[in-house]
Image 1 (spheres, rainbow, N blue to C red):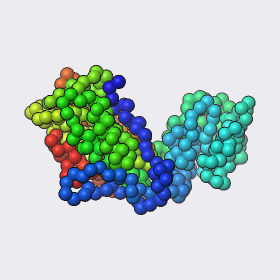
Image 2 (image 1 turned 30 degrees about the vertical axis):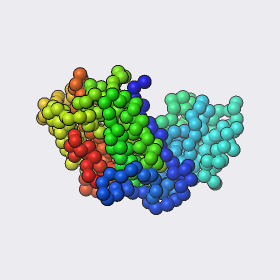
Image 3 (image 1 turned 90 degrees about the vertical axis):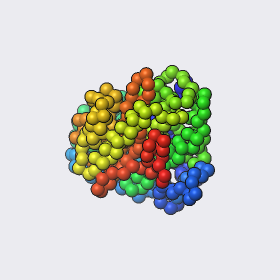
Image 4 (image 1 turned 135 degrees about the horizontal axis):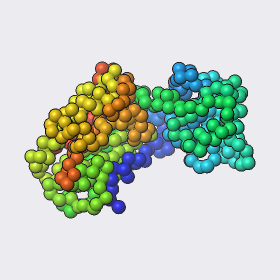
Length: 423
């Protein structure tokens, strides 16, 4: 099966704790060695995993947001939000497992009784675990927690990734409580990154670009997308971080998420690669577009337009700017160059939030009037797609700073001939 962006968007992340790398120096992008390109080396040295105080700070912020939004409690089930707030990873099944956060008191867990010993291995010591037997109703257990908190008739928020059957179960069984969307809490926490989280993403984005650079050195006539993907994955392994990229060759590059039509590499082909990796659960997302051989005048012109659009978006991104205004800044460049209107050639929004998930809140798209604040992270990925010919997309992730924005990971594109710059 041909390799596409979608097959790489959820590339697995690496946990330094799982690799037995204990707390060490703070994460930061590694500088390249002097004297030009070097053989890839493991990039994980210097990364410090999240500590208990990081999770405590997240829960404290969640409590503040609960109060600000008039919510009494938040129920979080298995998934990314659970990992974010607790570090507990739990497989999803038909059995309800999760945790109730409130404005007051410690988290209280809801767990199938036969899983209690396993839960005790993961849940921080001192936090209460309430269990339900196979014939019992887990939603009534949640109701009991609310009653003990004095909020049985209050407002229970649910994490946005809680499954539909669980939300319906809560509504059926907790008739006295008001069940609402908890996105203002979860997204309010996750949408703004700490310095440590940004450092993980800085490094992840740099690793992805370095892996692409190594992979591009191995391009050859007749190679398949799978061959190039394997070369990029191998470079990631040498750098110490599992990851990859989904290449598209020639006319297939005009499909923003890849074509299913097999194609081998031919001289003159556009090569578009999109993918990423993860460090301590934090994602990168990078696209580079190059030419195997010499670019045509049209390929070079379109690439330059896309780069100008990316630069315009980066310049527009700053505290107080709306998400839609940054999308508009990039889109205007493309339209003014004759590749419009609207989504005709620049076929998608400018970008998406990124962090623990490859795509997450908030989004850079028309109609989103949310104002940016420092610590928000987004992809910046304008593109022009001409079906039957080729497509060009340039993507770097960016973080909003106190006075503007910067791309993560360095190695920014300079030209179609120089996709990684000199840093």
